[in-house]
Structures are given as structure tokens and as C-alpha cells.
Amino acid sequence: MPYLTEYLPYPRELRYFRGEFGASRVTLLRLLLVICCPLSWLGRGAARRISAKLSPRRQPPHHKRRATTTSSLQAPPSLTAASPRCIVSFSGNSRPISAASTAKMPQITALLFDCDNTLVLSEELAFEACADLINKICAERNLEKRFTGESLIQEFVGQNFRGMLTSLQKEYPIEIAPDDMERYVRMEEDAVIAKLKAALRPCPGVDAQLDALVASDKYLLSVVSSSALRRVRASIEKVGQDKYFPGDVVFSAATSLEKPTSKPDPAIYLHALKKLGKTAQESVAIEDSKSGTLSGTRAGIKVIGYVGPYADDKKAEMDKVLRDAGAVVIMRDWAEFPAALKKIEAGEV
Image 1 (spheres, one colour):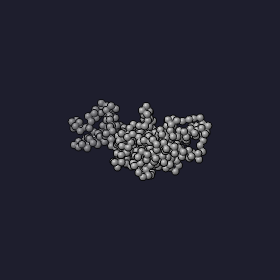
Image 2 (image 1 turned 45 degrees about the vertical axis):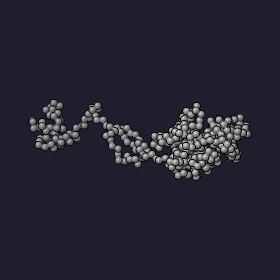
Image 3 (image 1 turned 90 degrees about the vertical axis):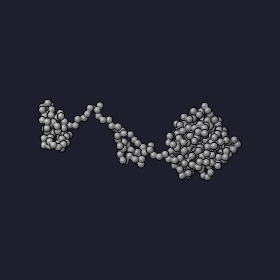
């Protein structure tokens, strides 16, 4: 049957027809269509379509199936940069894709500096001044615990005096009446400011960086501290840094808020952002303490940790402490600040 064999879709159908595998209704239909349309490819096409409906579909062996690759898949039109969060499935697996990962990094326009041991070397002087006062408070309440300036730094670095007394009440069985609290805070301010005016110095290298930042005219510079506003202003004025922070850009957790607080509460950073008209995404904070780093991080601000003022044998330890608290990059010297800021602006951290 040369006429039929030329137009039969699959040679194996002849085997079915001859009885090698037995008659098949699919085979008979194919042959009828081929005979009715011997000069046309329509018979062959129709036979294939009917065969596909009547025959169970045979799957190729598993190892011969075509592998689906991610490069051959197209994302749906709805998957755009404007979509807040999309799920795309590849070969049965799904993974979240955040639009933020492809969005343009916000431009950094504000730099928020902690004051104590970030701009000025004040912590040792301040803690020396308040150690005697805290010991007096403990003695008046029959608490045998005594502190030195160094031990206060280890326990309360980054907190203002009000925060220290609040922590003291939580850790030891003493109570401080609200009126006494306010009196002690004023006494501590006076004692510390007297010390600072006598011996305060700027952190090494910070003034050169502030000069460069002002000259670039790219950033709004601000001071965000836990310390009382009177003490912060006295500090930056003593070392001549007030020229870098003109206007109402100095904020104090102890003074600027309606309800006084202390870092690590993020309230002071949130207050500063509101007053400056900035967002957390366009701001960077510089902090030297765990409490300060937590405060900035909890406000949604990326923090550069500064461990320069710590003793050399403590720098590695504080590096880890600040990173664990949320600092995205650590610098040991103010000369490293431009590179640290560049990493954040480039979206590397």
C-alpha cells in the first residue's frame, strides 16, 4: 500500500493495522481520514487531533523531559517596582521578592551626631563629676553600693543622669521621690558643666570631618543627645563646634521632649526627625554607645558606630557590642568616616 504508507502520520500504525499489536479504533479512524483525503495534509492533521483526544497522553521518560529554567520564565506584568511585595513561583518553589531590593536608595541629606564621646571627649569628665553625687544619694538611702567614674561608665554609658537614677532604682532597693529627682538632675548638670568648661576637648579628627561636611553643603548637621540641653550646648561651645550646628538643630532627650527620657528610647531621634523635616531613610546617626545605637536603630535610622574613645583593649569588644545593637558599619577613627558614609549611601550596608 504505497499510497497509504506515504501519508500515514506514524509508521507504527501499520503495525497496529496488520495485527502486530491488535486492531485499534484510533488506528482505524486515522486510516479512514487518510483514505478520504489522500492528496491533502488535512487528513493527517485531523487524525492527529482525534488521536490526541482518544489516546491517553504518553509522557517521555523523566530523564528526557525538558528542564524548565528560570531564564525561560517571564514575570507577570503585575511584577513591577511599584508592587510592594510579590511572590513568583519557579518550578514549584516560591520566594518573596521585595520591591525595596530594586528601588533606588534614598539620598542621605541629614547627619545626626551624638555628643558625648562622639563629638567631644566628655564621658570620663562627666562620670567623674557625678560619681560623688550618686554615692551621696546611695548613702542617704542606706545603700552600701559605691561607684567610681570608671564603674559608672561601664554600667551607664550613653544614659543621662536621670536615666542612671532610674536604672539605679530598678537594680537596687531604693526610691527617689520626683522632687528629689529634679533636684539631683540640676545638681549633676552644674557639677558636670563646671568640669567640662575646665577640661573638655573634641574627639580627635572630628573637626576636620565637620569642616568637610559643611564645605560640601550636602547635609543638614544636627546633634541628638541624651544629655541635658544646657550641658550639650556648653560642650560644643567650649570646643568651638557650635559653628557647625547653627539654629535649632541641637536636641536633648532630657530637655527637648515633653516627657524627659533617655536613650535607648528612640523618642529623641523621632523628635529630631520631625523637627528637622527629615525621614529616617534619608538620615544617618553616629553613636559611640549601645544605648545610643539602639535608640537610632529603633527609630529606623542607619547608625555608624564609633569606638575611637575606648581603650585599645576594649575596641574589639565594643565593635561587637555596637554591631549587635544594630550599627551597620564601625569606625575606629574619624578619618574613616567618609568611607563609612559612602557605604551607606551606596546601599552596601
